[in-house]
Image (cartoon, rainbow, N blue to C red; front, side, top):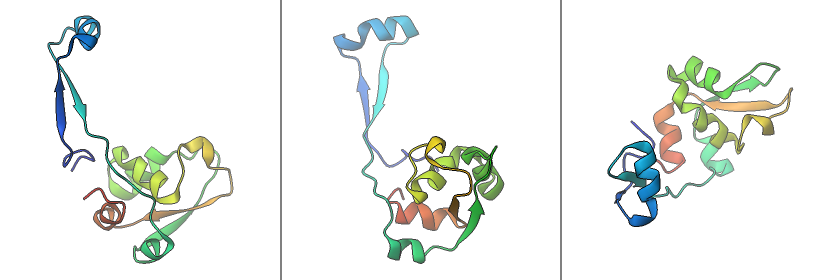
Length: 112
């Protein structure tokens, strides 16, 4: 379940990328369609079972994703669900919500 599974793939073999392909030693580069995503509304957030986490020094989104989902690659769901761009936007003492059902969260976020 990758976050780009349902998006179109463009095989880019244009002359513009020729130096980049040569540098990488590849004949083509795959580009994925930009996903159309939105932050969930308050009503949508209320429909998802979540738990609170008090952000503290040393916390990392990827560690929380591993703890709750068993896969650190889903760190972006926690960030997106809370409206944070990066961990630098989260201050110590902030209460963040962690959606417990990853499938529900992906549906609300418009990914599945």
